[in-house]
Length: 339
Image (cartoon, rainbow, N blue to C red; front, top):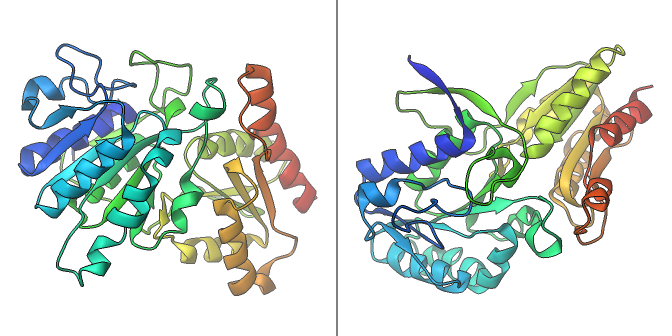
C-alpha cells in the first residue's frame, strides 16, 4: 500500500475530489468555496475543485446558512448528495431548523421513503476570533436523534471518515478543528501542522469505532479534535514522571464507541474527559454518565472533566488561553486522581 504524508486540509480535499469523481450526485455548496481562481473557502480546503468540476458542482452561496442547509435538504430529497459547508461552527445555529427539524427527521417521518444524505462540514474551536467565532457546538447535536456527529483529528481519520460520511444516507455533521488545518487559506491562523500517513488506495473508516491514540496503564483520557493533540503532549510529560496515560479518540460522538472506553477504564481504573466546550451540558457529561452506569465498580477514583470555563470565549488572546484547556490543567487533573 502506497502512503504519503499530507495535512488534514489536503486529506479532506482528496476525499471530496475522489467522491465527486466516483459519484456525479455529489456536489459542494457553501460561501466562497468556488470563486474563480479563489481561495477555496475560508481555510483553503476546496481550492482547485471549482476549476476541476465547474460551478454546477462547486456552488457559491450568499451569506445565509439557513439557505445553504435548506438547499442541501431539498437536493438530498431529490437524489443528490450535497456536502455543505459553513464558514464557522457558530454559524450552524442560523440553520438549526433546517438541521434539527428537517434534515434529521424527514427520513423517519417518511417511513424511510425519503433519504437525506447530507454532510455538513463545520470548522470548530477557538482561534483568537472572539465569542461568535470560537464555539465548539458538537454537544448540541448529540441530543438530536437522526443525525451523526464526526470529529477527526488526523489526516488519515479525516479522509476515511469523510468518505464514509458522503456515502451515508443520513445527515452527518463533520466537525473540523480550525487549528488543525495548518497555515494555509486566506484566513490562515497559527495552529498545529498535523501531517500524517494517508494511503493512496481507497479506504473507509466506519462510524462508531474509537481509536486508541496512545496506550497506557494508569489513567484513561478521552478527548477529541485539538484536545487529542494537547492530551498527547501532556501524556509525554507525565510519562517522564512515571505516569502512564492511555488516550482514546472517539472519532465519532454519534455513534459512540462505548466498548473501547469501558475496556480501557477496566484496565486503568481512572477516567478523565478533556473537552474544549464548556462543562455544563458538554459531551463529556454523557460519557461520564455512561461510565457511571456501566463501569462504576471498576473506578478507583472519581471521574474528572477538564473543559473550557463556563463563559463565552474571550477576544483577548491571553484570556482565551486561560479559558481553553491546556496541558498544565490536564497534567494537574491526572495527578489528582493518580497520586
